[in-house]
Length: 183
Image 1 (cartoon, helix red, strand yellow):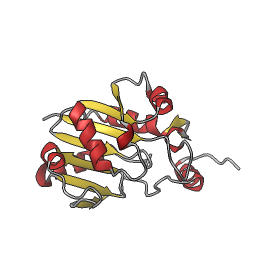
Image 2: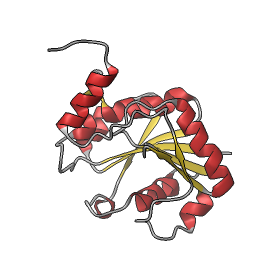
Image 3: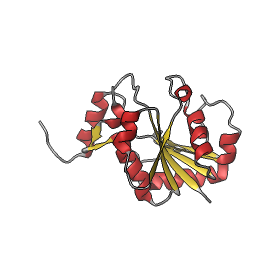
């Protein structure tokens, strides 16, 4: 069974400019997520899907990571994630695709395993908090409404609950996960 892990990262964040390349514990969010996928040892391929040369260059040279240029048609604000996942699987065929949302920098490998296990059984799964989303190739090939969040979902205490979208979110995640007093 071939499993592909991905991180999707656009440059055009409206609420927090350059969010995906901002540091968390000294490492850009996107780099941290890709490294976590690689370090898990679960995936046959790890792929960064991006519309940004800057994000690509931030990640270039990461061991075991492929970079896939996302077409402009899949890079707009209103494009749901599913067509981006389908684009990844077109270029990196797999039995299961798992996307790790780098907005949740604290996520245990066990969440990847749980998402894959549930996807094998039900075709798809989504962690709650929404850090990890997995689908079988059959599910992606026959996807219904890409704006509807999937079932089944599974609750995980192994994902830190802050979804980073603002500078305050990023600072809160740092404060809660670093044992260092800054101010």
